[in-house]
Length: 300
Image (cartoon, rainbow, N blue to C red; front, top):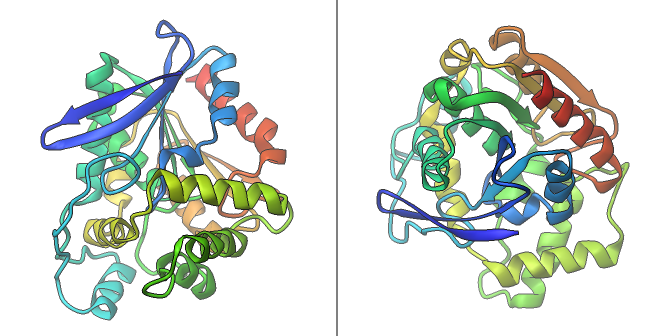
């Protein structure tokens, strides 16, 4: 594993990479408030072992990348912004948009001297991947959109229990142990009920996550970026790269209707529903998921 920091304008983006620099590049983009380590090291190593140079990085406002401290979202009350978003319109008042996040991803490739890559995004990262594949078509070998949506107008909203769990921070003044316990609980709400991790594994991962970087305000700004970007259908219609849409049958945070909307909007996209998966990447399903990814890469 090699690691470093890519400077993109005023933003520093922490990354690491696996595999040979001579192999085709795969850029992994994580989701809302998610640090790059949610692409588990072993997951990345397995893709690299199949003959790929795998890069993961922290989006701005998460992990070890630049934080936009003091930046305010604004743009009116949240219910109004959510209503505009539901009808496919961008809601004003964000520090940045998904386009900025896609440009960050392109900047990571610039830093590493990579002309083209397979672009893989999960959740909000899947939205970034759609924008990237449209705006940076000449740099996209293939696109993969995992457990995500194109935010088309009038799509069924996320499950309220799952969305509330993701967006609600622990009580003010909560200590380290309480925050870690809350993280474990959130993972249980949005994760795969068919393939839950062992209790000790869930606790160890939540502890690692907290100790690496606990920064809940970044979630709010990234969520504002999603709302400010509105429907991505226009981007999808510009995507020419071979596109894979992967989604779990048990995902209630990002409903399957979002995956189907992406697959319908991107020309010749292939939709694969993964039985038992929810809004996570359960280790028992890695062989299936990585198999789908590497076959997709090889065909592109």
